[in-house]
Image 1 (cartoon, rainbow, N blue to C red):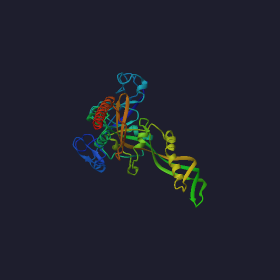
Image 2 (cartoon, rainbow, N blue to C red):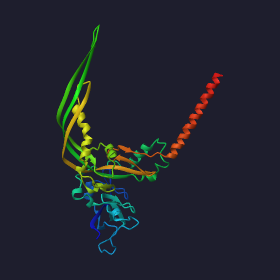
Image 3 (cartoon, rainbow, N blue to C red):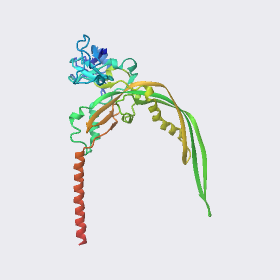
Length: 379
């Protein structure tokens, strides 16, 4: 028998016109694209803002019989060909237009592809998956577009039309799941320090070499070490987006998700523990050796015992664009709070050949002109 679970979708409604609301990072409030009004949390509460909720059963199997009385939605063969393909898929109903929304099993906020309605899936972030806090967006889509265009500016080898408006519109705000670790590091540091002193008199040059055994031990405490908890996100790029100013975080509220994509974590803290220790180990060694009064230090051995008793689950804001070119994905990402960007850009073979020929021709002409001028002078 196919597995069924009751799910729920929520849309936040504008008190003024009844259209849907999205969270606006620039305004730090909820905006309605239909009537243009913007509300803060207090105004929404005073005006009795509503949410539109739709509850129903969801089928988790592709081979479910269609005569099940409690089955409202199912996956058809043109969407998936096997149970394995759909094991991580979910189907929801758009509260606005009633169309079917397909997502994977980690998505917590999404859009209806038919009406554009931003939809929040509360059950995906309930219980153990409920974040302790959220860092709201402070930039908007226009900021992300400008940052992407700036990254591409002057890149002559980009594929043709790589920065067209159709691609820019695909930039999406995503709340990425992170675990924040508090960690203690007990270190035992050993090394050899060397100081060399040289002086001379009228007859000789003297060199004195002093060697020291360096031993330092102690404890360092780290707070809020962020590690992305989604298997979809490339770790190196998420690390490169830091810093996030976590002191501006808010208690988690579903309303901040409206208008963005969001995911729940797929990695538990214990699965990120080794990555966390590898990340801070160089910092521990650096602090242990800090302030050393030696000209040269060698033979360094630093043993560190790590422990982490507290981890906090949190959603952090990222603008993202994934572009596929010649069977390879290229990711652009922007910190949704600070505007810091990282990204990869493709190189067009056609553009490379074009610019090679241009440079070759210019070089050939310059070489020929120089040869002509030099030859004329010799004559």
